[in-house]
Length: 198
Image (cartoon, rainbow, N blue to C red):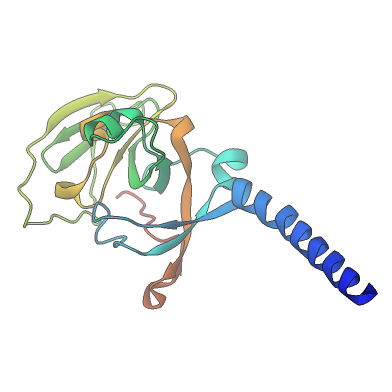
């Protein structure tokens, strides 16, 4: 009887310690994310398994242009997709514009205007994938970002619900950035999808 009691106590202690270790890691440091859909093809494919770093943006630094981020879908995007506004969904997209930027989109061309580039910097985006099976969206817009706003786009430009349609993303919605791709095993890598704009 004593051995069963000791065993149960040990089980309780192991479970409690696991929760003490795992829950803070999942909430503050990293969490798993499974890619759903084709909006980030070919950088990230449907059903790829990622580990998302939540620590950096909470405690160290701000999101940067060129980084791929995971974020809570804003209500404007939920409404556009006919989801209920209380639905909790996450998207994965690339940061194109950061606070203070003016982003100009003309078809598939993106130009950034800011204090460093008052005449505009046309982005050279080698990661962009144009799915020719989907009609090209001829979008022309100009957006100036506030101090807490980011402009995000999917790498698969013809198949992405992003800031071109539902507007800038608030900083508060950003969860983190992928730091590890674990599946498929043939594509395991660290900091997948990061691109320094040319």
